[in-house]
Length: 140
Image (spheres, rainbow, N blue to C red):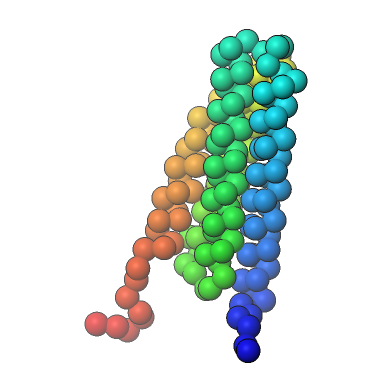
């Protein structure tokens, strides 16, 4: 029985995005547990809500990275891998800034939150572009 063996360059990208997504999802679960138990008493309701938003977006987009890893099992348009990079930057900027804003007294990360949200939107649109059906070169 033959097994499917993707080209090495695609296999490397699959592994990277799959592992990255899985680790970020696990860290999101850890952060969610931290917020639900250890931080609940020390954060304001608004702070806890912002922290929960960071966790939710982190996990959601980590799962998207895992899906992209599966999509990269076959050769795809470069925008698919590009979407993964932009979503990763979005997780760092969006969730990271919310974590810093809620867990520290720092205020400078605030402007990074909407930049992260913009990265999420660009990442999803890049994924759509990369998955959009195209005619084969030279086809009618």
